Length: 276
Image (cartoon, rainbow, N blue to C red; front, side, top):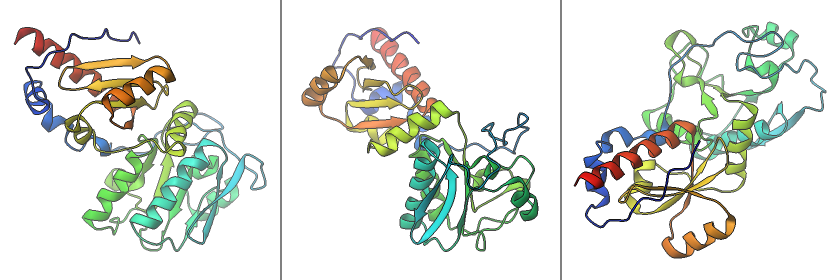
């Protein structure tokens, strides 16, 4: 991707005017909790539905234990463990107490539990929480407020952790959380979670003023000011410090869809400014 040039500054538009003029306010509303509706798809041989390789030994060093409340589960070590641990602990704190939690399954255990052959549990990339309250192929059993919170928690992982409550009706799985991204995407999202990068609704960020966003795909930072259409790559930590001291504003983690939408919106605002 080629970084867009620094646009000329102008003072003729408020942020709300810029958003309205670019036709973006409605589209931006709720983008921080983007969800997709899909059914499980076929996986490559030797890998689970999300294409991560199977782990068929419960004692494999690729697995590690995560904890939420007083419950434990085995999952794939590294960025997967970081993300699923984050989701489980946020669920415990913000949705409901965790009573039961499970993770990795061997092929034998997966078959015995009735899981699909390519279950993401077999690669250590999925957990089930409170399944006795939120069973498979049943209404999720969560309130509207809890559903919104769960989607917000998943958005805080840049969308790399996906909730089974957003599967199609035939596969609805309110207990289930899984990795829905590549190893590189998981690593970038885990770095944002571990680094304490602020996550908040994108519309809220844009209306508040200049911000520095972090692309979960690459880890690169960009300076964004929606009132001017500025969307500029931050090339070094020193430049990032200068921008922070000059303009303030948070570091905000965004997923790939949000990044592309913001870039497109900034381009439209610059175009509008040139013709106004």
